[in-house]
Image (cartoon, rainbow, N blue to C red; front, side, top):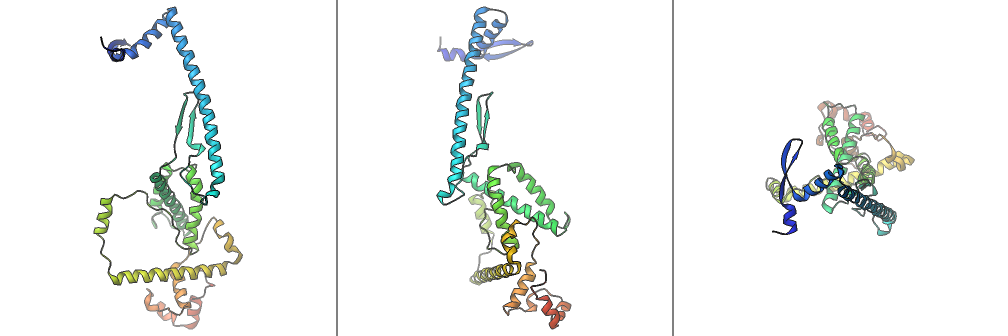
Length: 313
């Protein structure tokens, strides 16, 4: 005869509801004891009652341990969140949120949905940044009166809904980062702040995919690199100029600009034309003006009104 473990793993045939099937002896023995207990056999009934008492005690002890552990974890997380500024960085992540701990006292189980590892964390941040951008794009399209046929707003809504299935508004990371990302994106888009350094990648590309992308991209020449550098420098000067200009125009409203629910989109091309005129570098031939518009710009009064910063952009 083999070992007890081998014996318990051996198969036996049972009949249930008129159908036969095979189960292990380890599964069959408890079934037999329960059946004997239901048939009124005292020794089997005592055995079942002992099992029930032991299981209830185990669950009670487990529930107490879980409750005490949950309290300790929540207290530790709360303290960590309150003390984050001491580390010199308010975004010391990933951390475990108390809301990510799901305790089933009846079953005596705990489900922990976090914390994220470094790779998952970066992906989550990228998705949150994309979601905020979608929200701002949709709001901007609605402000301009564009419908689904005039813009990609339908695609934006669909994309946002898909990501929302993964990251609901109750998600701790969404509540932590989305408001700050929204302010950064709005400040950059409507008030000419420096480009915000926000994560954008939803997934990491493989080395093979990256190689394919760069192999198909034209190799930059010295001339193209110089032109790119020049454009970047000019764009930086333009944004700095507009930032200063808007601060003067808005006055005291500048400090609360990011608190607004709706932000009027800027006409960036018109702002750039006025900027070039103010620094003495405007040339109508550099822009796609019609012949009629070029002729109108020759009129000093029209030109002055067109270039006036008092006019809405």
